Image: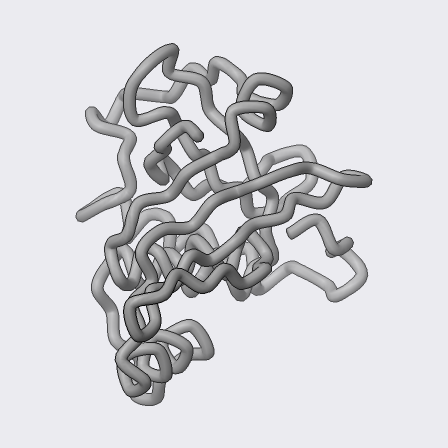
Length: 172
């Protein structure tokens, strides 16, 4: 497995679809682009920015449930790409045992950013789908944090104003 970091949350200009860029933490610097739905992208951007909504979002609720049953999300793994759909797993420690739960990558990453657990991509998937991406570095560091996260939230608000339900497949 290859450990990755969420290096950016963007809106693809051609499709107007949110995309998460998962970049190798070490190694060659390959990036796995994962297209996600607008609600999940917004949830991820809010968590990165540390904004707590007045009522918990679904991902916040899932974290609260895990905590209430004394479970901990230890890592997420993006496992494969099948028929243009990515698959992921949640690796949860519960009562000393590791439990693996199937997940959409967007939900897995939304949980990972909330609990600050590592994100991994299978070697085979990174080898077949990983890209070398040139980031626009005019604002300095392109990682998702601080002022950059505010920009991401603004991009998604603008995106949400124009998106229609039929714009989404089930790629996440």
